Each structure stands twice: as C-alpha cells, then as structure tokens.
Length: 130
Image (cartoon, rainbow, N blue to C red; front, side, top):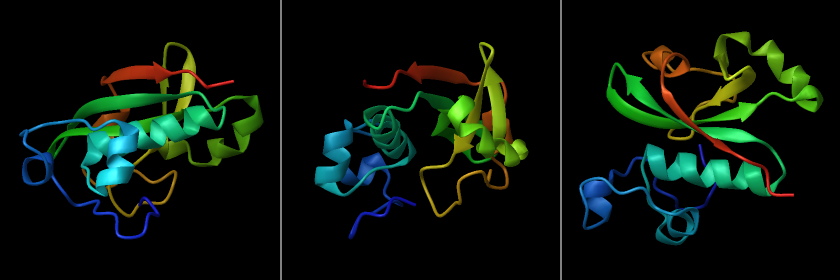
C-alpha cells in the first residue's frame, strides 16, 4: 500500500474525478490523495524510474475485472528478488517482479484472483531516469 498519510487507495475514478476512467499523472495522484490501480501503478512506476530502476506498467484482467500494476525488472543487482518466483513474469527476454500497487500487499505477493496478470497482458516498459 502506498505509505502516504491520508491517501485513499480504495477510491475509483468515477467518485473522485469528472471522468468514469481517468489515469492520473503521478503528481496528480500525490496532490489529490486519490486514485485507483492505474493511478497508483503510474505513480510507483515513475518513482522506480526516478530512482534508476527499469520497470513496466502492466495492464490486464483479473477475476475482478481490468487492472493495472507494476513489474520491476530484475537486473543483475536485483537477483535476490528471484526468491519471489511465484510473482515473476517474463516479457521480451526480461524478467519482472509483479508489484501490486492498489491495496495492502507485500512485494512478491500476487493477490488471490490476480494470477492472470502475470501472463499475456499488455505491458509498457518504463526506462530508468539516469
């Protein structure tokens, strides 16, 4: 869960913006203190990139409907993350660790019903900011 005091992670766009579906820019999510899965995934992906980590924005379907999350690229210096093998997926010959950004999940844990997020979904690489 995002550790931002007073941040509402259970908020859907329809109740917090003028649009039914709206992916906020990372700064909007911080400012508004609202956002759903796509808003939080965009924010976390931007934070990883700003810290120099390659990652991807992951979009797919779960048993509960459409969803967005982040995949952190497992580079040589992050090999210790391979211990979370049930949360690792591969895209274009790169391994990523699934990171749930909308709810209370530990890194390396895929929530029940979200296993489909690890296979056959759209993903958008986010290059690190050097």
